[in-house]
Amino acid sequence: MAKLILKDIKKIYPNSNDQKKKKKKAEAADEENKVNLQITEEGVVAVQKFNLEVEDKEFIVLVGPSGCGKSTTLRMIAGLEEISSGEMYIGEKLVNDVAPKDRDIAMVFQSYALYPHMTVYENMAFPLKLRKYPKEEIDRCVREAAEILDITQYLERKPKALSGGQRQRVAIGRAIVREPKVLLMDEPLSNLDAKLRNQMRSEIIKLRQKINTTFIYVTHDQTEAMTLGDRIVIMKDGFIQQIGTPQEVFDHPQNLFVAGFIGMPQMNFFQAKLTKEDGAYYVVLDTLKVKLTEDKQAALKAADVPAQNITLGVRPNHITLNDGTNAVSGTVDVCEMMGSEVHLHVSALGRDVIVIVPTVDIQGHHNDVFALGTKVNLTFGGNVCHVFDAEGKNLIK
Image (spheres, rainbow, N blue to C red):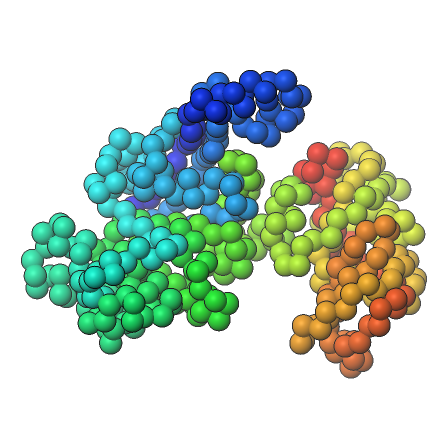
């Protein structure tokens, strides 16, 4: 198969006349706003300084909010968008100027993009017919792909007679039938309902074990990213924010954006203080004082981090309730029963704090009912603290 290398990839959409007028107005704004708009003399910058090496047969997920540049990056890999600057290699070959049909890449679109007048068999056979494969070879490849995807029984049907999940399987089958070097998937499950999405996620995991192909998958759904990817590339405003395994980006987010984007419900953030007493680091949040664990102490000492105001991040499932000893008090505003756990929205320190409480705690007590206005005391340990500086960068690497 193939290793994929992207070096300093950049995509600029040239300014139209209307955009040039907006550019002139933007020049009157302050420098910070101009940077956020990513408007240059050349045009609007959609992707900047994108560097990534994808190993052969690796499953990479590009994830981020709408407009972050992930689909544009995928389309540049496919050859559907021109690369403004930078270099892209598939294997050892520079492919910047190689036509899409000659890149040995297949793509699965969000909208399935099946031919309505063709049967499932004909849809899947179509890319092989274009390449003038022998009829026997086409039949073998189509039936093998159909067997992998469990759609053999639908080969004579037309797309209109299939469900959304079945159509997506056909679209995937059409993509894998010629065994491409790289398989690109652009939010392929976003049109499916929740149950089908869960089912198709497991099917894609099984699929990557059966075919020797490099996967690059685009989604805005962090659940898909966390469950599918060998590594995740988190993007914002055209820039890569962090690259790592799902566990790495969850446990060690490099900045506030990654910390807030990865994890559901979202991480809680507090304005707190990092203090240093007798050579040890503590975080102080109102009446709560927590000593950081030895590994975090070592990281802060190695970087000689001074005492300072910080943004403290704590995930909802890491906050616990106690009797008020070394804790922050709050009031329950909303109680959401989620089956095995209860999601509490607590008003504390002038903000909404989300706390996840097991329905049955380790003492066997049931926590299924928290009436509106219930007073609770929140605490957490030093092992679950994510410490960020004023610029939003994680102080603990």
